Amino acid sequence: MSELLIESASTRKHSSPLQWLAAAFACLIGLIICLMTWGGYLLESNEPLPSHADAAVVLEGSLQSASVRLAGAMHLLQQGVSDRVLLPIPPASYWGVPVAPMARQFLATNYGSSLAGRVDFCEVSGSVESTLDEAYAIGECIQAHSWTSVVVVTSNFHTRRAGIIWRKVMKSEDPRLQIWVRGTDDPNFQAQLWWHKRLWAKTWLMEFTKLIWAETVGR
Image (cartoon, rainbow, N blue to C red):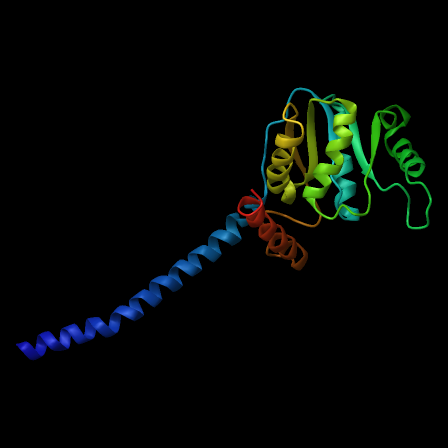
């Protein structure tokens, strides 16, 4: 009888690590499945738009991202949600040519002179290298216009982090400013199938890492 008890205890002792390993592996697989299914939506923040805001603010990004962000801001202008659009631009191009006249011509060609006339430029220097830097730089332009409400327009994958950073900065710089964040569909990312393309997966990994930083150390 004692031998059977000893053998049973020995079996439990050896099987316990295997059970823990199997449980850990199952949890890992479950986590991976959850990230593949819903991970893309962790980056997004879908906020209801206000009925009116003083301006729609376009955040900088890659060439493709900047294009869809500008289109999203101009759409808000066309719909009457915002009175103005604030577009960040560098003071001059790589060859030293002023950017503002070229930007104005582009806007007039693509959106008409009436809407183009309701776009204000915010000159941002090349030292701006992050969303945090950009919030401080564009914040100065917002304060110069004495606006009290803005819609920050950015890519869908950037909305949650942008909201965290912008509200943190404006809480100290201009507490009276009301902020909403609007996401636009970006060719660099798709939330539902973010792991289907290398570019989408790369965008998710980089943005998710930055979001964790903003939610922890950045706060």
